[in-house]
Image (spheres, rainbow, N blue to C red):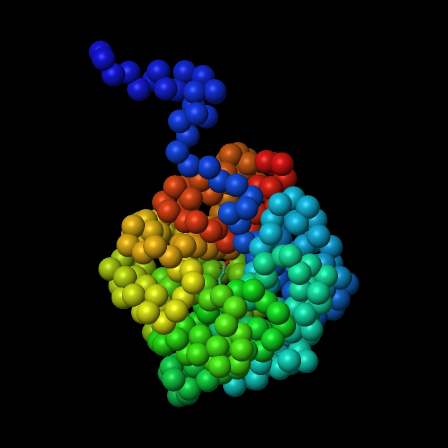
Length: 322
Ligand code: PBG
């Protein structure tokens, strides 16, 4: 035998020399859930270890995370039911608790990269990402609201807008609204290939944002489709997206790889709530070693081609690897 691959595995030093992929804390965006009550902290039952936080608690959490090397955060509001309406009007209310909190967070931590989600579901009494009429999700009418939402968030000083709504034409529309209002420096991370997935369940528990009727299959992608992601990605690139995202991550590693091989833009992957909860549940039962499967999972997403990983594991990974 001339070739013995085991020679390159014989010691930790050699294994480390030839290691192809490395996950680091600087790869992460940490999603956080914001409560209106500034000192509140409420556990998300279906996401052990994750809490919805009021502003004061969130400021402390961001400070801790920054000291651990996590530099980017995606902040989602938990909108109390009485603020929701069919036009999702609070999503562009500059005085709403979410926008107030975003301004404060950017003021306290200007060095942190803050991302926000653009989609109507947390603010909509229908629980859909777009406006609903007679059971149908309106596309072009929704764009107008998404534009106002993005503008309201940009005005808070946030760094990256993340359109997660999957309406056609939204990246270009939002880019145009931002640019014509002077926000040329605000980035867009498009949820390019966002699938109609059952893995979002725990997130919808956290925000109480599940659709009141129907499902999201007329706008989110069919989990069976890979080539269709190229149509979405072509459009997003043309419309000015700075990052292309695949979501979920683990069940869609092939799509991450496809986009990485097809586009020079940075590729992000959203390691979603259900993917997080699976590992937590199995390890709570003693069936899996959480620290190891968590790191192996993140490694697989990076190896598939993700440059950026949105993950609820971010803080635990950072604590383990500091
Ligand atoms: C809102 C949005 C969702 C997620 C991120 N933004 C839920 C959905 O589309 O239903 C899911 C994130 C997760 O599961 O961690 N459009």
